[in-house]
View 1 (cartoon, rainbow, N blue to C red):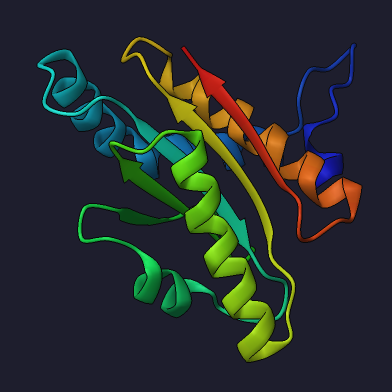
View 2: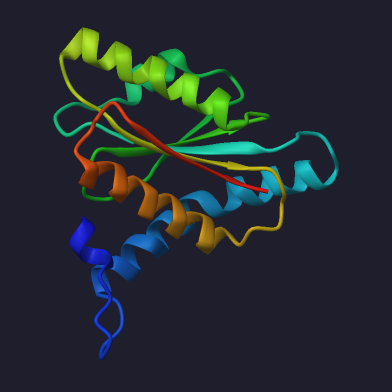
Length: 157
C-alpha cells in the first residue's frame, strides 16, 4: 500500500489513495465524533487509535479476546486484513501494552507477525481526516521498516 500515498506533483494523489482515506474516514468518523463529545464534557480523558494487521490471518478474533468492553473494533481497509481499535481513556502506553499483548499472542498461537501503529489523542480538536492520514502514514512506516514487532506510536496533545 505504501506506493498508493506517493504524490505525483503534477497530478496530485492517486484515486486509490484518496478512496482509501475516504473509506477509513467514513468508517471511523462517527465513533471519533462521539469520543470527542465525551472528551469535551470530561467524561473521558482521551483515546488511542491502534491500527493492526497480519498478512495471513484474521486477527479480529484475537483482538476481540484481548480488548476491554469499552474498546471499539473498526474494519480499516477494504482490501487487506487491517483493523482499527479505538481505546477509550487510554494513553499511548496503555495502547502499546494492549497491542503488544495481541502481537505476542498472535505470534505464539499462529506463528504470524503483526504490523501495528497507534496514535494517542488527548484533545478533541484534531481533524478526523488528519488523524486518519497520520495513522495510515505511521502504519505504512511500520510495514516499511520490516520489523513486525515494533509498534510505531505518536501522541496528539
